[in-house]
Image (cartoon, rainbow, N blue to C red):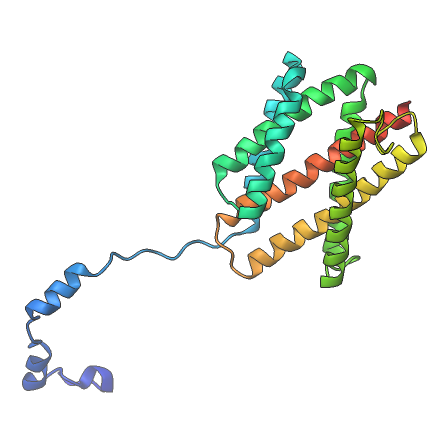
Length: 262
């Protein structure tokens, strides 16, 4: 039967041409060897999505909160300083290596949970209800900066990034100098000395402001990673960045509230 469709008409009813389609040359020994040695097909890696970042961040913060609750209930004050030091070292390693290792990041979260749980219990024993106030304040700043980023009220430009990184480095250097000075002089430079409330409150407000603006860099990093097709595992590094900023912001708000209580 003939067909009016030229694609179907070619070959059907024409025995010679139809036969030629079924007479493919047999593969040689070299072809078979090449097919045997060909690497197995590996599907392309999945790209990072916003859901990936949300889930990894929730897991990381879940570890912080869970371990922190244990440290609060058991009053593990003795582990606060070692946990803080270990967490600081892990943060440096993850940051400079840009590690996406879930075990390393969750270990960092556990150390921060120990530190925050213990230190929050100490502050809350001195100033009743201060811990929950700090949690509410941290959540409020986070939500506010998310709105600022989404509305484009503050754009993350290269100039803004350089300015913020410079301010961040300056605050870290001042904090380290103040800590070293406190070993030789009571109160150090006075940046964390409640007996000098004006300077202590001013420095805490500066740190809170820089921490809040750091959220914009975190949001921009996540947004660019999604748009540029970052691999799925990069969501762990994004979750780490958000956790670092949240922990720092919480501590600064806790300090500020303690100064105001005094």
